[in-house]
Image (cartoon, rainbow, N blue to C red):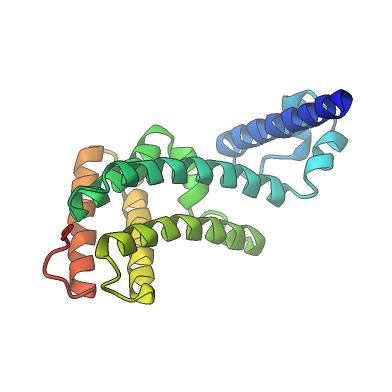
Length: 209
């Protein structure tokens, strides 16, 4: 039993080392320039060891993206939970601050999750869209809880997709116009999406009542 546990720990450690090296190379050199050979060299293992964990580079990239997305989703959920008793606009602000802070502190990792440079690769596009849907589900659940069942789920999900899409597009714009502060970006984003939410869901004001 002890030998099996030690072997599993070693395998898990190699797996995480491969993820660390893979993500670093993807962010530094781009997807096309990253190879299993480079990843193996960075981990100081042979290529067959990398292939033990991943058969294709796409699989490794998506696993890196999944880990990054899970980290983002945890921070997003925590921000929403901490602000759950606040006004709806304040909850949106807290969530948006997490989103744009990620872009500000680690723009390359943000682009890995929300950029469109890999859209021509069908496998990667499908995988990234599936990961994106997990974040949108967090937004939809937050809205459903806040609105206390006053609106059907399909309408709320549609708005959640819009909230996510607007954020991604503003993020792309911010990357090209970095003179704006995160506070300015978040403030403008919140104004846009809360206005759209109240209009689409036909609510005069979204409150905690």
